[in-house]
Image (cartoon, rainbow over all chains, first blue to last red):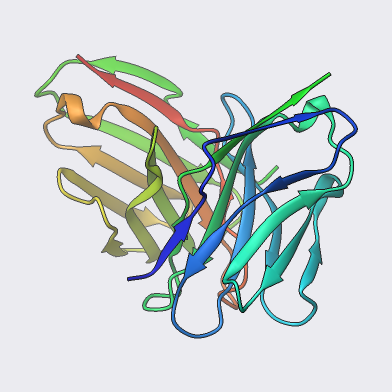
Length: 114
Length: 114
């Protein structure tokens, strides 16, 4: 079955330190992967996507993600965390059986401490 | 921000009553989606639409119906609300074209069923 896993419910990091939010996926064929961020009382905002090409994808607000096909992972990264990065992050993969749909992970709460 | 308006933003109602949530877009996008967000489950697709009068079920469609009589509006109806349908509901839209286009989300409707 197709799926996305975000193994950490919460990630804590000090401001100024690098951050990583983990995502692994299970789909047949080449995956189309997305990261979204959700701030309190708001909808999800698109951060970045991987379709094909360079394994390091750059997105909004200084975030980037690294696609690793052998490890079936698509981890979200940022070199220097800000307190304002504190939010809920979702990884998603295109449903390869119905490409109109996305399959979302359960989300990871990022807490950046001053 | 994508031109998506969800109404109402908050609603409290009683078990057994009908409820209709509205999603309105100003982007003229073909695809529209309804999700529910619950702790520990991430986002789960309820129904989606790929054009006027064209809809399909998602993974948690039981107890929900949808209608799309014009491009800009996508309605979600709970025919007889139950407490298990207490959730935050999000509408999303996607531009026609390649499946690589990201979905863009509204700010949600918080629905409480007592």
